[in-house]
Image 1 (cartoon, rainbow, N blue to C red):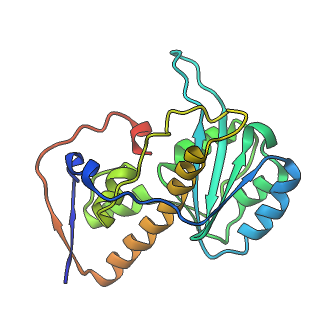
Image 2: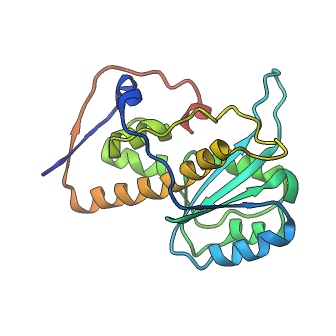
Length: 217
């Protein structure tokens, strides 16, 4: 049976979809020393999902520094609290690694934010946005892509919360981990569909406005 996908997913359907969320272990990293062991573990994995979070600014022209780097496998996610650890040598080693595929969404923006914390040469990063278009999908946001390919909803309720809070809430941690983990799922499904061709693209002629790259998260 062919999988039905859409060039543009109607966002009106998203609130009615079942919620997708990460069900694995979440580890919060608070000290530079902890980054060493975490990175050693991550660089032994076959694939990683990446994302970042930044405290929202409601003042025009001002932007906070990126405060969280979340890196997930299929069953564990590390939340590196960069506002506590900084961009440590271990994290730079992770970002510069050229072996393990690191899957993200709109990673140009994330890398620009991380470069403000320290110098590094980005390694093996794969941006989902560059690959999903090969299926004929025009949507760029994580939420629409996940709804389109899996029929599930990624909640964005915590996106504008305070990512520099002294202690992250359970909802913040789950939100952050889910976004990174979802990138792995999306990439694997895109590769699967490209390889077997067992899908049908339904073209929705209605044009939906994408306001900016910040909406692609």
